[in-house]
Structure formats: structure tokens, C-alpha cells
Length: 309
Image (cartoon, rainbow, N blue to C red; front, side, top):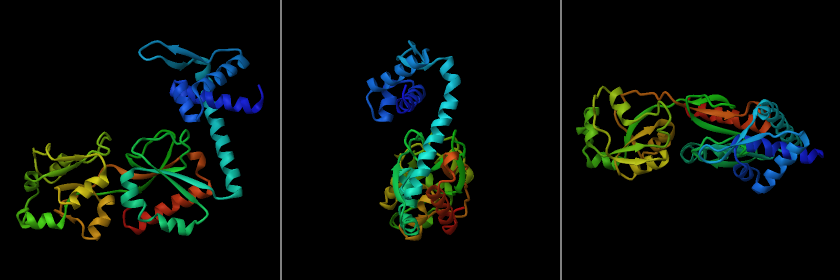
């Protein structure tokens, strides 16, 4: 088997084993399922042994056999090193493209208002922004670096804390005026208002909810199930700006809107720090790439400048 075919076959085999599907591997590699199957079969013929068994439980899927399972860690490590080597060659000729993944809300409320400063500092680096709430596969999707919100542990990724954040209720100045805000003398009184719920990452253990905020404020058994529920933190804040109700805001997202007077913070004396935080994440083997390191350091400086760390 010639070297280029061998490398392509290794990629096809690794992707098929990870997805347990020729079709999903083909989508990742931008080829047809038939091409992936042919590459894998060619590799099996060259090796003289099968690499997969087909599971008949439920939906048919490819399952790596014992031989394949033993080899996969070394193959993945080798492909990672090859990918890094190619990145270094690319850097030697130009700074190239930096692919960054963040959530849509973090992009809208924090990153995009600041990204011009990075582009001014590193004009030779083109930022490609991938906004997604999904936990992307950095290797498969060719992601260089990202910002994730959580407890700080993601398999296969290095994570450096970027920002902690506080959780508090906010509303528009107009709504506060209409509701004669002085009547909100105690946190429990908010439970009678229309509450806006952020469902963007509510599956993450520890993600702050209205129930948790009320409990922290000393309000037991507050009825908070009703209200407006939105799965995007930026849209949650926009609904509050538009006077649709009272939102439970995340400070990193809401800080600029509060500074601009679009939102006001309610009950600032109630302190509630989220157990989750923002982390800069990247594959450890890419840590020394110049453009990645430059973007990571810039993120850290911006976080310090905004008083968010």
C-alpha cells in the first residue's frame, strides 16, 4: 500500500472507529461512505486481518474488534502529531487561519465587541468563528481553540480558567418604572413577576436557575416554573431589554448592557457566584502554536481588563 493511501486509510479507519459508522466518518472527511469503506477494506487486506465487527443490537453499527482497539490510541496520537506538524509548516509560511469555537451568546455579548482589538494586534491572523452550543470534536472539526462554560474538565482538552461569573436578576429601566420598582423591597416579591429562564446550558450540573437564586436569597419554595423560557443567553437578555420580564442574568453576558443603561441589576446586595466558569480550551499538543498562544493570551488580557477574572 502506497504511503498517501496508507495515511488516508488510517484517517478513514480512525474516524469510522470513533463514529462507529462509515457514513458519519464520510461526512467528517468530506468523501462518500463507499470511499471510506473501500479505504478500510484496503487497509484490512494489507494487514491481513479484520478491524471491525458489525453490531446487530438495535441500529447496525461498526464496532472495532480487539486488535483495532489496541491499535487506536497509537494511531490517534500519530495523526495528532501529523496534524500538528502540518500546522507548524503552515505557520512557517504565514500565520494562517485560527478557528475558534464559542457559544452564539458568548460571541454576541462578549467576544465580537472586542475581537477588533485582537485583529489590530495580530493582523496576519484570520479568525474563523464557529458558534455552536455543541461540544465539538476539536480534531475532527479542525478547531484550534475555544471558550467553554462548565466545570473545567473536558476529555482530551487543556482548560485554563478565563472568567468566573455572578448570577443576578435584571430588567429594563422602563419595566422597573412601570412596575414602580420601589415595591420590590424583598427578593420574594420577584416571584410574582414574569420570570425569564435561561435554558442554554441547563443540562450542565450546577447551571444556575431561578430556584437556586431564590434559595440563595433566603426565599424557600418560590414558585418559579412559569414564565418565558429561552435557550440562548443573549436572547434572554434581549427579552429583558424589551421589557418582557425579569431575567436571571449571567454577569459576563450582561455587563455591557448594564453599563450602557439598557438593563438594571436588581437586589445587588444578594451575592450568588456560579459554580461554573468560562475556560479557554485547546488540544494540549497545539499549545505552542504561535497564533493559538497569541489568541489565548489576548483572551486572558481582555478578561483581566474587564474585571471578570
